[in-house]
Image (cartoon, rainbow, N blue to C red; front, side, top):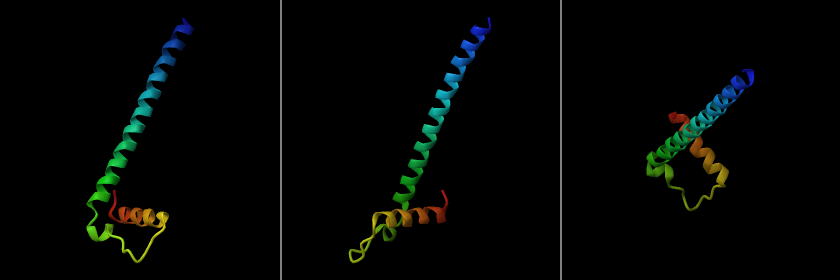
Length: 73
């Protein structure tokens, strides 16, 4: 009887783990969607980069992240 309970619990635990993983995945998708919407909604002046100044990729991402953090997500 004890092994039956353990098997039932282990199957329930596996199901809960799968549900948790799926919830985390969905949450990450929502975060990405919000970031993309924020990037799209930025005014053109923010998105335009002067051709005279060339930024390194990390600087561009840092500037975008700072702008999003200022406005809040």
